[in-house]
Length: 80
Image: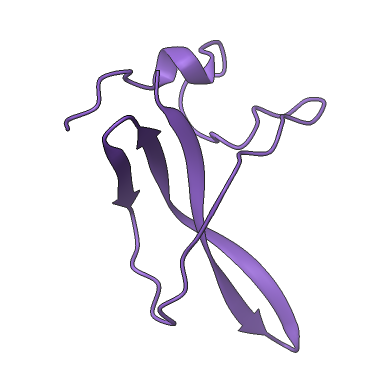
């Protein structure tokens, strides 16, 4: 199974830095595949470990059926 990372970009607003998740990355034996839902206009892309879920929340995966685990929601197949 490939290791999953979040792809985020920093956005400066009102003197503060906010992190916007813009995709996901998978680290495999042959390289890193980055899948973007949005392209950072500032040219900055950071890959980081997903945060563990907090009480009462689904975790950093965010979408889908709350009865499904992140592992069930993701496909283990890597296209390369």
